[in-house]
Length: 359
Image 1 (tube, rainbow, N blue to C red):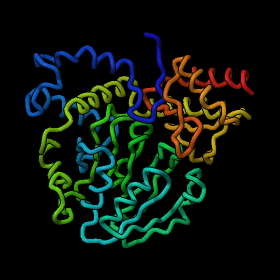
Image 2: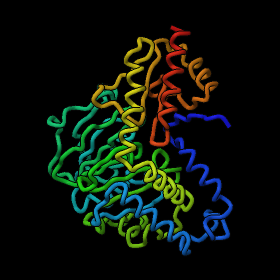
Image 3: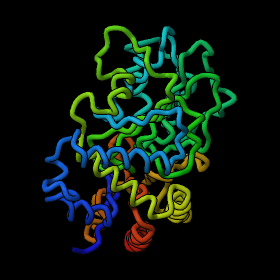
Image 4: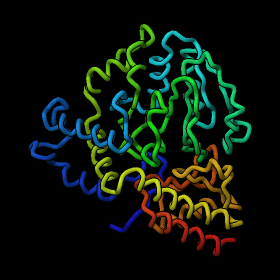
């Protein structure tokens, strides 16, 4: 099979080595005499896998001991509800940062539980810039501040962590494990798995222990962080196969040198692609340079009538899933951890050739 580079925003590309490991273990996991999809989540084999998976993630992210790591279902979207359910803790307000499609969804859900204070809003600039932090209007009575460090659709990524006097909550679905962060600066970090952690069906939640145990009354028991923490994320049957894939992804990331090493590779990949775009009159990226995403690179062609031809020609070169989101248009190259530098090189070479043929 020829090398195919999949630039999908999610579910996203997996490393070839991980796919091969999944393939080799599909019919029988370890010595379990059955597939990992068939064994009990409470059996010794899966329990050992789950415990090692958490240890590896803690090591990779340097997660302090006073944080719980949960492996849940419902996607990051379920956390739009679980965050206010667990973190309001008697308060009636919360702060939200509005910088894109996914933060907007979190805001909509947050309003079902509390008064939402939007402390900064990027809608006027079409999610291409972020207001200076000194100008944010943060309500000190808010129970927490929620933000999305990387907006997948617009390609807008924070280059800093907001410093606030309340629990900081981050939806890191599209940039977790792509750069080093200090977990202790956050109250809650959550991420859907289908971009940098593995496959869809799993959500990783990292929550400080003092924020567990006082949910809003009359809410679903599964949406109580304490329920999940006290049962090792196994109050009900978990998403066992996505959990297994995450374990193999964490092993792969450790073998690559960890997050620090991956961050350097991600910097190089993004720099190459943005450099090509910036040096061209044929392609453009609208995001303020300071806040350009390393994970999701949207770009426009000077003549949008060439979009379909671009996608057709790219696919013929084994560069797939480059169509941009309908709200932005153009193209989008998602270059998560699994995308090798060679994939970005192939895309850049194709873009240069396409420009010569069609400019």
